[in-house]
Image 1 (cartoon, helix red, strand yellow):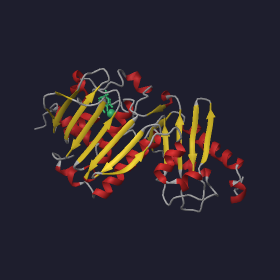
Image 2: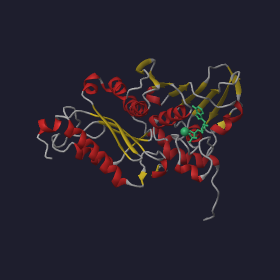
Image 3: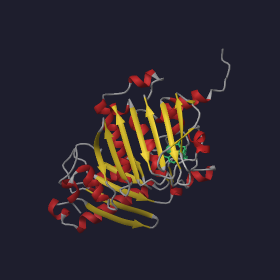
Image 4: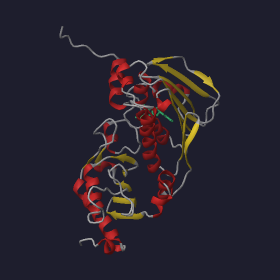
Length: 339
Ligand code: ADP
Ligand code: MG
């Protein structure tokens, strides 16, 4: 009855998939993060039926060699870290070595990849976790991962898929976050044969904001650039004439990774105190850079939440930098901001 048994790899992968792969947007996030980690400068996302039918991410990154293709989709297999100490200096978006194995367990996945020095690409197809033989195929340098019929073998998850429009909204948001973190990368999104986004590469975050949210918001942006020792804050916040009824346009990035952090969002809100009506939230696109050793990103499988060693100092730096910036512009005088 109560006998203890070791779980099979397949069950372990399904459990991991349950934690990380919630919906098509999660697949897109994981695949695009892999493309970014591979140094890609162009990433194309193609979707059918909001991602439920097909998600294809194609990149021009460094690729995976044919002999490593099986490992790429194996669980707990990664090229990004080696030992536990590496966890405190991760510079890549991925490191758990779980994403591809998880996705492959709950979909029909094809990975096709060609490193720069290979004569041809190799392709591996996995159906619900079962590997087909690897075959050579012609393809340009880089990697393509195709995910069809997500959750076809996990009916409960499948039932939780929402309308095409809802899933597309989540998926676009996932790409938006990554595109804001990497303005120098060219991203496209194509849905149902129609290109919905063509985000051309730029060295300027404000230009990327304009591509995503329109010129009107972008022209009123206030630049922030403040350093405190090893802590750097760069980016833009919106003029108080632009605000939202919720905090969803507060894009915070830590060392290139989108994060959600209540405390830092609170600091952002505090900085605008007196500048916005109650119930309105500021808009911001802010990049924090600090030593990876000062932050634990291994708090949650999706890495959305992080833990700072010195949360208080970061809070004060964000709030202080923004207040200083606002005081130095005529925003404060106009809004009659209490000093
Ligand atoms: P992680 O990103 O945490 O290492 P993944 O399961 O997402 O785990 O990927 C496993 C490995 O497969 C990566 O470490 C990387 O070596 C390789 N890989 C995955 N996607 C790509 C890609 N688009 N380009 C190059 N290598 C990739
Ligand atoms: Mg990954």
